[in-house]
Length: 177
Image: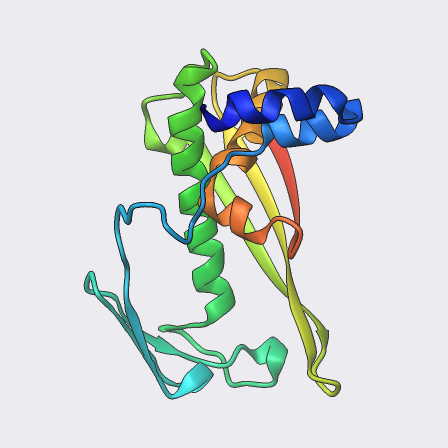
């Protein structure tokens, strides 16, 4: 008996809101799902050190001025790297989801842009820290209503969105160009 056939009778008995939540969740078990790709990074020296990646990444790290460091050109930090990764992952997930929803994404790269800001929040003195994400999704040629629906579906698909759900406040705004 398939899992969905076994669960269907239980969903009929559940309150409508529980059934809707369960029906929209994917059942991917990340503990035993097949590995599609693995990335590896080596960090030396924490926020004022260096990071090397398995695909050729070579970056110097620097404590941002906003956190009491020197900052400076040619250096990055974990928040900037996370912003870049989340934006790229979200945009790729959007491109995978769009055709399934009948949305035609633009072919020119500059016509689909994700701007991601990762905020370090909390209290340094109490060592009580977290992050909050603001994302602006801008796509040319897709009306705002369709883009909003696409973003909602993408949040269910994007691995970064799924990993941060319930842990990181993520505010997404859309703009049709």
